[in-house]
Length: 531
Image 1 (cartoon, rainbow, N blue to C red):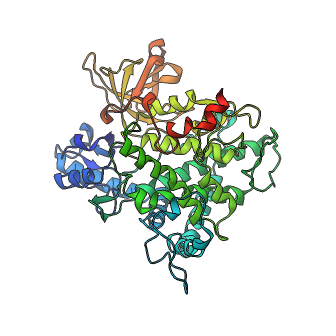
Image 2: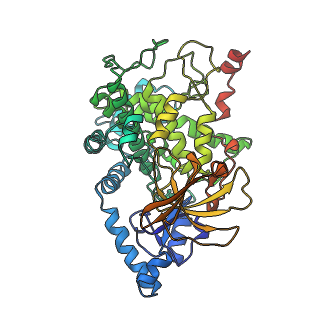
Image 3: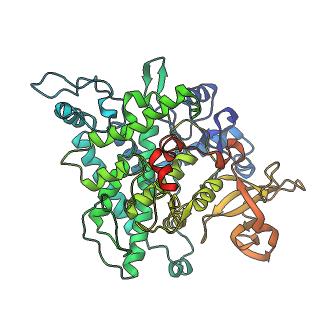
């Protein structure tokens, strides 16, 4: 298995090859060159996954590194053809047509037989003027093409079938299965490239984020639904009503079609960000909420949710899918957008969706910022979570995330890819790592079983699969020919931390989301509620 490494673009070297596709021109298995690095930098790519042959693979190629790299490229290309990965790539290509920049000035926003009345910025307003609704409907048919919706639903049906065939992750199944199906999604995301006011090329970042969020949502909710079926929970037959002021505490399982429509809403999650005024702001490297000009940019980003709501107000898109888009920015702690609600009940689907999109945005951002360390993001989700109790406390007294659903999401998550290079640090000290390892496999935790490759304290190197560490159980395994010959329990192992060294990850406590950030969380209504 090749040694995979997640690296920032400025740290790429010609001795590596791309492990995943980067748009239509840069393909998995392609060697890294100056042209590749330049194209990635132009598209403001946060990171890429690269790989290089191990010493054993170079030796197997009779010491010829170029031959080893060429063979690795062939293996990667064959791996990319696996059913799940192939379907995912096709889904992203399908969604890309939804996320092309559009504006009310486009000719498509002109209903037949009527004089054009819509003007720039109308889609970003809270409430549409009745005079322009026909024009918006005409534009919606062009931006959200019915055929693209049909193909997206077909992809969702296929993914649902693949995931529904797997056993639910429960304590019982973990004991019986040596392999737990976890989901790792990672892709180079290319942002739109602008030359002044002109769009030179359009990337796939919005489509890729929507596709990956949808797949994580679908796997998590399918797994959760299976557990609820096994527990004998009643089937929910009520309509999706986000305007409910209160709800009972009953836990439900959900119909297959209900889940699929919610997944469609997740696939449409970024529609408002495709507005031309907003699209132009997304690749911005930094946005400072304290800067007056940046405040105007952030406000435009915040208003983008309305564009998605207006374009999806049509009969061929269910109310469930529409509400997944519009409520993705509402949180139980009343820091959502629009301004703080009065204890509106948030459905399981919405609360799970918020967790997934936050994880994805923090680890592989579409909005301009550095990516955060994946273990820090998981810790952030847990620290910001609590028990969800709808309509029982005043606004502002909830945790941001539902702790039960946070754990449900983490239970199916593989933060690191099998074969990925990881760096182990002693506790919270990140000045210098003490071990270099490689992700071997996953057992019953989101923390992987790690094959130690090098001990930085002694300089000693180990063969892949020779020495394994499992942090959750503080276990060390010595292996020979794939079998455990010795095992030990050491307390210091549990203190080890995985850190994404080569990303220059920011401190997670400084995380500020530009869409549902502090500009709204300190709104007048919320200040009043907290007094």
